[in-house]
Amino acid sequence: MNMPLIVGNWKMNLLTDEAVVLAGGIRDFVKSLSGIRVVLAPSFTLLSEVRNVLSGSNVGLACQNFYFEEKGAYTGEVSAGMIKDAGCEFAIIGHSERRHLFGETDALINKKVSCAVEKDIDAILCVGETEDQRKTGKTFEIIEQQVCKGLDGLKRQDLQKISIAYEPVWAIGTGENATASQAEEVHHFIRKTITDKIYGNGISPLTILYGGSVTPENCSELLANKEVDGALVGGASLNIDSFCAIINAAKSV
Ligand code: 13P
Image (cartoon, rainbow, N blue to C red; front, side):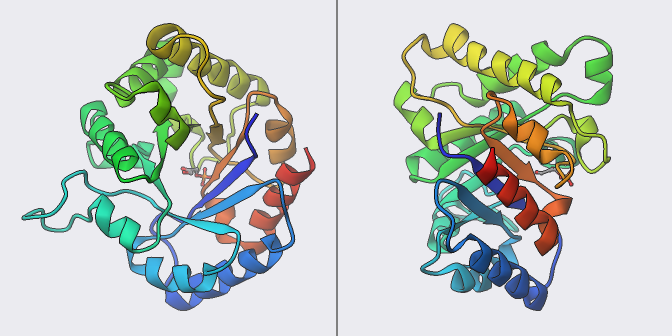
């Protein structure tokens, strides 16, 4: 099992002053902790300032998205080289908000995962079913499709640079988290899909995060599950007390 990974996805929130205070507080809290990896994913405009705050600390930096082309006429986009240049070691890819609000397809997401690996950036590939898909019994079909298409063409050694985040769409920002047993079931299915359908046995341990309404109240139970290697936290990562409580819980389980 890998070290627990706790990622704060700040989404489209915070201005520079707020981000600097929050990142500084998290950096100071995490300073003396070992055996856990904490990563912050601010918006593009905050990367430079947050990088300065985190410099020399044990808190990593992630972007929430990037575009797979190297450079050129792609107005409004940011390349993997640029996010690496801005200090990102991690990239969140294929978040459900990108899929559903901005029309990202599995094919596009796959190009981004390949590009991240090529640039030596740790990819966090997000997958998850909608409420409707769960209700109509399509959860596993959807997850299999998103995992297989997202990893298409990637080699088994590339998995060392890839984590998966299971984020059921119905749990994101709703206050209704998946139960530990729902998360366990899907995480187990993801591991099985990756071995049975893609790489076969003998792959290195894969980090699978859970995301969707993670709070200080529900995180211990979720993180105590052997299938859950960490959390991708949205709303609760914007508050120093709640995010540090989640980090603490991950450290203690
Ligand atoms: P919430 O924690 O706000 O539900 O968001 C989850 C998420 O989308 C993290 O990427």
